[in-house]
Length: 410
Image 1 (cartoon, one colour):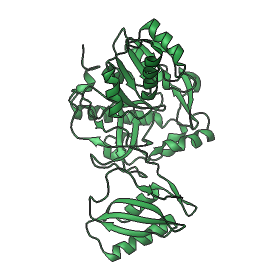
Image 2 (spheres, one colour):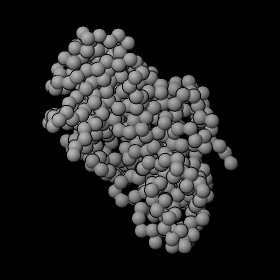
Image 3 (cartoon, helix red, strand yellow):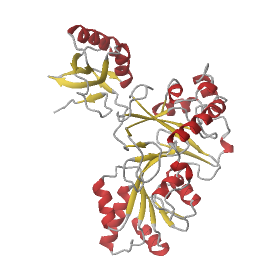
C-alpha cells in the first residue's frame, strides 16, 4: 500500500515554497479581475508578490466580514469574477456565507487527507456530514470519489437507518464528526447492531481528544482528524505520524498575531490565515478566526509540508467593557505604537460592580515612564482607562490569547 498520495507531498520544502510563490502572481492577477479584489488590492503589482514577506503586506480578509460583504453584493461579495452558473454546486453555511463549488474533480482538496487516513480505491465510505445546503457532505464525498471509493450519502442523524445502511453495504470507512461516530458505536452496542466493518475514519467539525481516539482504536477503528472549513475545504490533516496536522498542498498558510496581518515566529500561537491558489474561487489572506501554531521540523510520515498543532481556540476575542467593544485589533495597535513591547494581554475583570482592565505587556526594559506611556495609549485607542503591568519577556502564556475576559458574575 502506497504511503503517500503523490510525489508532491514529499518534495523538498524549498521546492514547494518556490512553486507556490511562482504561481501566486498569476492567481492574484486573475483575482483582481473581480471588483472586490480590484478594490482591496488597488495599487498592488501582483508580479512583486513572490515571497511570504511580500504576501504579508497584503490586507487580511476576515471571515467574520464575509456575511456583510456578501449581503452588500450578492452572492459572493464581488470576490468571485465568474457567474454563479459556471460552478458545479452552490451552497450556504451559517452566517450566512455563500460558497460556490468548482466543477472539477476534488474541488475541496480533500482526497489527500482521506488518503492519509487510509481510504483507498474500492472502499465503501459512510459519509455522515450533511448534504443539505451546506458543503460539508460534498467536501468529503468529492474527495472519496476522487480516490475511487463508493460513498453512502447518509448525512447525520437517524441511527436506525444508519445501522441498516452499515449492515447492508458493510462500509470500511466513516466520515463525520467524532461525536456522531461515538453515538453510533454506543447505540449499536445497546441495540446489538453490527458496525464491525468500519475500520478507519476521518473526523472533523468537533474536538477530537486523545481519549476519544483511543476509545475508537479499542473498538478497531483507526480515526484521524482534519481541519477543514466550508469556504476552503481541507486545510490540514492528520497522518500516521500522529504529530500535529500536515498542511495541504496548493494553499499558503500563515500564522499571524490576532488582530493583525503580521506573521508570528515559528511556535508562536496565532491566527490561521489562508491563501488559495484556486483560479475558480481565490481567497487572498482569509483570516479564519482560529488559533494554532507551527510545529518545527517534518512529520515522521515522510510528508514535508508545514505542520500545525491543530485547533487551539478562537482569535476573535472581542468583548464589551463598560458598554464599549474592545477588540484584538486595538491591542495590536498599542503594540505597533510601542515596538519595545512583546506579547500583550488585556485582562478584563470586575472590581466591585464595575468593569476593570489591566494590560499586561512584556518588555525587556520596564520603567514607570513606559507604563505611563502605554497607559495613555490604551486610553487613546480603547477610549477606556486601564492599569498597565510590565512583565519580563516570556512571562505571558503562548496561547494566542490577546483579550482575557475573566469577569465573574454572581
